[in-house]
Image (cartoon, rainbow, N blue to C red; front, side, top):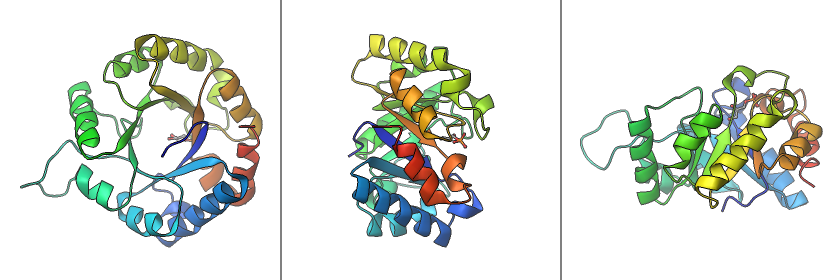
Length: 224
Ligand code: G3P
């Protein structure tokens, strides 16, 4: 269950969050989630989902799924396989894995059929409006130019968050709005929530941190 307000840690394909390192970081995230009763989830590489889901109580997301069904397909990510590996949801259309609109539409449908919640990424407010018409469960607004930077979306482009929340909620107020890109401290999280986001996506601020545990503990202070 992706309870809001939520912090989703996107492991991407960083060395520090791959394979055995993914397990270690997932254990840290899970320990903090349980100790502080904060809603935290991790988006892992598909090959790490099963091992992580077996040992944590927090939700695990896939970073992508393909709009395919059972049958003659080779080298794709079947939604049902991701679900049975233990993922509860999937990211889709991340700036680093963009999908054509029609493919995104089919991917959301297939995720739903496989009982996966969808967290669809949008690069700006216009993109978010188009995506809202597909009725995903979450939309995460992430200006690509800020991803991986030390400048957070809430600091550099607060209007993108507030305008996206307004636009998305006016189309379907059931869609939960998250934001991400450059988020690296509790003030960035606090500001995002004040602007109307119901949670954040973070990657380098936690995965690449000198001390991953203290970096995540700092971020969750921004939720309260
Ligand atoms: O999905 C979240 C991610 O794209 C944000 O990256 O490194 O700016 O936290 P980062």
